Image 1 (cartoon, rainbow, N blue to C red):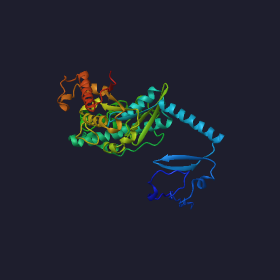
Image 2 (image 1 turned 90 degrees about the vertical axis):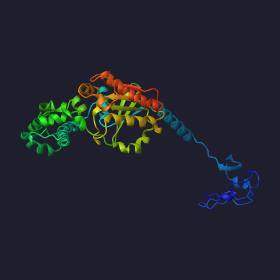
Image 3 (image 1 turned 45 degrees about the vertical axis):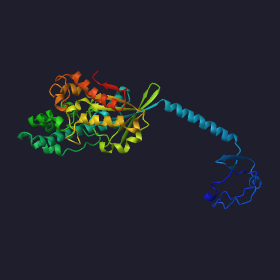
Length: 384
């Protein structure tokens, strides 16, 4: 329908009088409202009309009979909309955010165990294969880091390096190949590897290696199946979007974990502006660790930078943000021999004071939230 702009403005006209100007031409149907046509001539063929007065110009359009079927359809639509609205009122969507290695995927796995959502046989098999990959891949990470640390593997264990470098992925149902048992065990106990592992914060080495290497005999059992703790300890980088749904009393909780490089976050973060809450994870043990993707950056500083940007984000002005200080167990282990003051000079607590260290990082995050005019933050760590 094309309306000539020359006739779009004028004084008030009514269809009970002669229409003195052409109002509109429908080029598709060929029907033309011509000059000097009376309203009764134009509208006489319609049983009912609806008149709408817009900006002083009155238009008429044909009316339609409302059938019983139309009424039934309308009522059904209203009922479905009401049900959908009621369901939405019980749905909670939580977006997981945090810096690298903050434990977002681990929280999802722990939630599944808490709420008794079993892992499927396919998932268990995937974690079994991933355990072997964590062993070989983690050891390769240490070997790579040793070059930057100017450390070497002892002469008697050099022959095992090629074995680890050539490690492959397991096939479905394939036990851990026994030819890897001796090389893995020998290298893990190598003095050079041990020194590099103690300096793991300099290279963002996988934190689960100590757990798996302390139990190699069990893992290499031909009948080995991952335990719940094995599954929690498994590490794999999240790619894409992963949603997990939990039923909590009368509510449906959907937790969303989004993978990808931090440099890309600004391109997709607005897609989640409708979430109920953001669960922001920060690794307490990351205070002395670098990032996997940037050896010159500090994990905790990176977490604070992301936290600050989320608190100030235009997309989440009305979204509650929950701070979760994670990996308290690892924090307690390392703090006696890794002084917080070395990485955060304004820390005034004693070396090894776990509570003082934890409270310090709480205050740092809280100050950033207050700057963004977020005065109510919920802080949690898994040690209290």
